[in-house]
Image (spheres, rainbow, N blue to C red):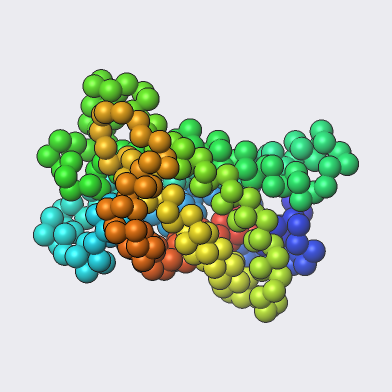
Length: 308
């Protein structure tokens, strides 16, 4: 198996894995990579990276969700969780665990697959175009798993604590009482977020890493990957934060009419006194969570690619 790089293919600076370093990575990882194939390993690496991230950052995400939904300060959101007790701290973990391990696998794996297909069948098309289309298609495909995000929202909202017991019970209740359509409430802001954010993430990942100090060893590459992913995730998190606020508000509703995305945004805007500051309440915590989350995801993904 050839050397695996730690950067996107669009980046000209391609660090090589030396033979002695390959030996240190372990025969098990190399054997697994051979079984999965060159394309399959991108799905597995993305999934494991997402699993690692969710376990570490779920409590932070729960505080952030309360801020998005209720417009409260971080301290008040933390006090809400304290009153609910440690037993409920990881309530709602399963949906994001299932969703993120799958969607991040799709994000990295389908991006690579779409790139390969478009480069093969759309020869002559500028590479930046094929990569942008591939990223947008991968982001759109992730929205298929949005029902997990929907269930996570309901389980994290304390107003539904008595109604929905766990992931399976929530799915059963939504499907039995409201149908499949209810599971996709809030789909529009998810689509508006996923496609463009993927295009920017994959388009800027290589150039940003190129501008970081050149790594001289494995730890250096790990740090650069963490910084690169973290900066991108944090920046995109701020850029698309209002869409996440709209999504949280829309998905907190159960039953009733499906309100258009812009109407939900205007409702939140009026409730928060037409204040940009209040609309972005929770954005600071979101910035730091995204910095940590996408740093972990990007660094773990690239590390696993080398191991496999």
